Image (tube, rainbow over all chains, first blue to last red):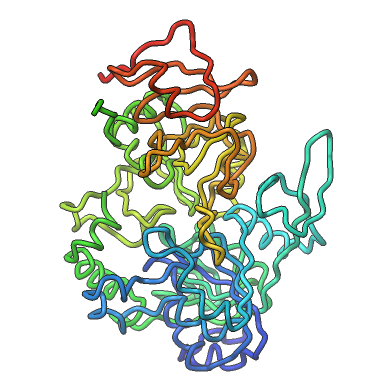
Length: 263
Length: 222
């Protein structure tokens, strides 16, 4: 059995070429593959296409106190200088200046393709399933219509949506066995299962790697066949639950951040 | 200056539309506040993959906050018995099943029930579409909870939306700090007014002509 476990994140991303497309998770500290993001930044591949559900910058400039933790999080905005195209459902937040953080990149030629969470999930699944395209009822009469064929089926209008088949998927799992079976935790899961199924090369960043047989088959969410490379998050390191807890405490001490994160 | 309902009261009134056994997705803003007023037996859904989770965590319960348990808006919640966790393809199917009720905020709602809530129109570089287009397409009932006018005092209930649309003809009920309005094929029906407000006063702050319900009453604050 081929060994899927890599010793370092840098080795796991070393072959990512210019022009590659990458799908990955995005929800706050929870589902970011922070080590893979940092490694990709170091690796330096350019003209990439990034497929994510959200891209929201951490407001280091708006909340100065956040600068104390800036080097402790690797978030998606680190990759902006390397992108040619971005496919996403959420760009920024109104209260954090909306899409303004993209302006310098858009001016340099960054292409932004907006879609909805649901359509993005469906396009990834369609890619996995090998569909040529599918008709969706989402977004009629909105910007989602732009450039898309419309069709009436049984008296109802639909938009033609294309599958997404990324070259790579960065998957934040909780536990992997050495064969590549993955389980997730909480909202880590998000759209990772579809991304893992559709990508040509799936790289899993996980908290724990166990022996085959230690994960109950009933619990496996992403079966081993979909996973190519597995790397363990260093305990207490970047992207680890321990680091996340510490950061959360620090963040919640900041009044401006509390207002954002808590009721 | 006549008193308008507080955000919490708008949320409370919107939450009254739900009953035991309903499944609901709550949007960012006033709809998030609905969680405090929702009756027992209602299950929360969030697009990023959880159903039946517990209350949102407040600022003074930080030790409970866990990054594994956040909603689509990034807010922390507590696990609850009967909760399920799933991926976003499943979540999308749930949204499109017609089994969910959605309560959303809005920038504008039109006379025909068009909804604009993802971009003020000022941001050509992106916007927050999120799950709102999916929810409005698939939910069995779409409730908007919002202020009746903008900060500048302009009507948010308009003849035609000027802000980029989230979906056409999707809203069923509008709950504001001044009124409860039902969207019908015949037009917008004013069903309830905030205590102390008349139908004429509400009409003055609403662009399209309202149909006054024969049984028009005051919003019950209890």
